[in-house]
Image 1 (spheres, rainbow, N blue to C red):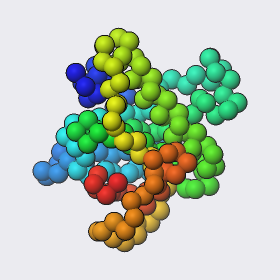
Image 2 (cartoon, rainbow, N blue to C red; image 1 turned 30 degrees about the vertical axis):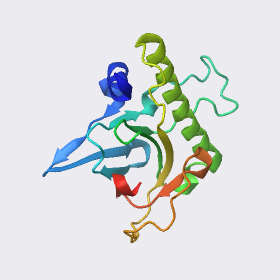
Image 3 (spheres, rainbow, N blue to C red; image 1 turned 180 degrees about the horizontal axis):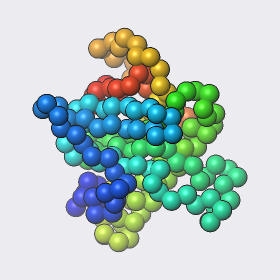
Image 4 (cartoon, rainbow, N blue to C red; image 1 turned 120 degrees about the vertical axis):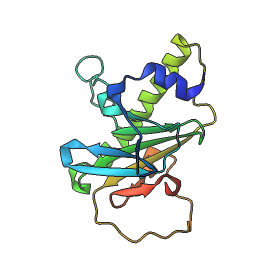
Amino acid sequence: MGASNALRNLISVSASVPLIISDGKCFCVLTEVESDYEFTVYNPPNDAIIIKCDKFPTTGDVFFKGRNKECKRADYVLVSETEKVLMFFELKRSKSSASAKDVVAQLKGAKCIMDYCESISSSFLEENRIFRGFEYKYYKGYYMSPQKRSFERKDEPNNRTPETARILRGKDAQFRSL
């Protein structure tokens, strides 16, 4: 079955973002409603599934106390089985709208949601370790005026942990540049 099919069987339509095809171009729009900010990812893989982690119910005061920020979650996760990647996105209107610790906690919370999806897949769909061999990448997007981007990569960004999340500049990016 694999990760894509397992997630399509588990995640409700209201908790996902559709891929849009317009004028022969494929993209998805990640929206931060509270801050009137959008980030567009151009040319994502055709099998990409974008999950709105905000739709996952908060467990604060219901199960967890929340004192350690364990009830937080990031805005989106983009999953691609063909690219073997999970990309976690937290979008903010400005750097001052949340502390760095809160953003890290939100990214960690989104990873926990994906760990939960993997566990549910194993227990109920008999699909074990659907994210085996996947790379995890973390991003924090702040609305900023676009800056010129180099077409060549100088250094591979170390965005493999929530603490080292890469800052997204501007309002859009090509999937390959992420």
